[in-house]
Length: 233
Image 1 (cartoon, rainbow, N blue to C red):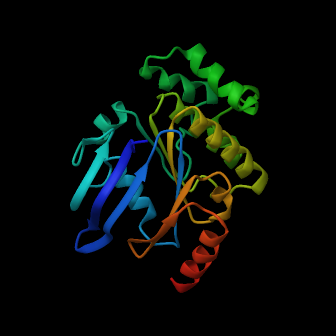
Image 2 (cartoon, helix red, strand yellow):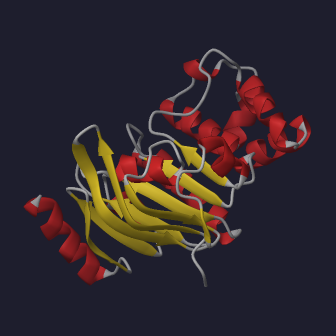
Image 3 (cartoon, rainbow, N blue to C red):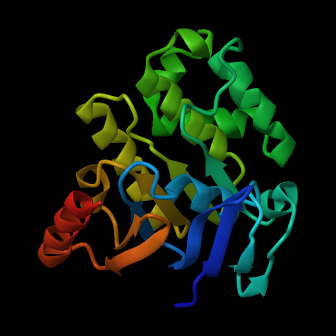
């Protein structure tokens, strides 16, 4: 199967400081790729490059086999790239229902968006008229995920989905991520805490100091290598 999203030899920098040193990464439809590594490894920058939020210094970004290096964020979003950033992508002063209403620009009706969201996470239906900022972190992350899915993405990118959440909630969120992948969406997940995502990942890559140091199927051997890389960093 061909990759729908691919980074080839991508370098990225902030001013004079190079953060990504020529990374190669590919995500296929219906598969989950976990991008792992210690703090400061460049994981979030890789997502930002893939979403067009941060420029490529050199190398290429491909979407569906087309070279989209340098494309604007909005154009990549229209083409099906959805990034849910770290720290909950919701409007805290709006209700759950109004947060979802804002996604009708995608062409889907309010009813359809709400039905998809409330069937996926029934708790959001119970919180429909509650202000998003007053909900728990887990509920806000559920809402952010539903907002992202309303765009009907081909590629879903998640940055630290588990940040600050209870393990039970994280498991629930990742069950939904696995279901999203089963529907054919390519999923790229950045996680600092590897064990939370490795059980559902089809492929994993470890980023250390801006370089992919190891990648492959996340089996027992991979996990042993991962521990050594984290300690070595």
